[in-house]
Image (cartoon, rainbow, N blue to C red; front, side, top):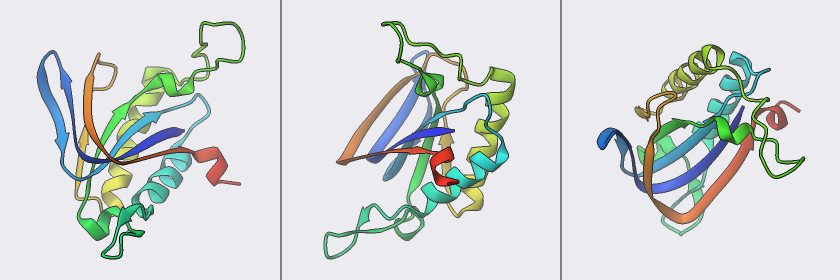
Amino acid sequence: MKAIIQRVSCAKVEVGGETVGAIDRGFLILLGVEQNDDETEATVLANKIAGLRVFTDQNDKMNLSLSDIGGAVLVISNFTLCADCSHGRRPSFIAAARPEKAEPLYEFFCEKMKQNGVEKVEKGIFGADMAVSLLNDGPVTIDINSRELKR
């Protein structure tokens, strides 16, 4: 399972011109579910993200987590994170999990974020064509792969 995390001042996702999810301060999380992922991957990734200390404290040091600041998350499913660009110019998405597997793991990940103390977890619509907008804070952007966390 792969995630791109962006620290944001605000973010929202629209489907068909209608806002379906929006947050203020927190993380925009683009989440890619791969074929071999399971609930263990989702749990490890949610635990790590919920505890990341990348929000600034009173000394302007990145030392605070989502729960420390009362932050929220906006989680967007994104199979293109699973792209393999090693051959040719057209990415292969064969590593991405099929929707019938990916959607339940996406929902499980969102629940795990709540269980880790994130009070506001907003989502896009799985499989929809979404327009995501954000105000990146920093900018702070972090790439995390659950397989690397399990080593």
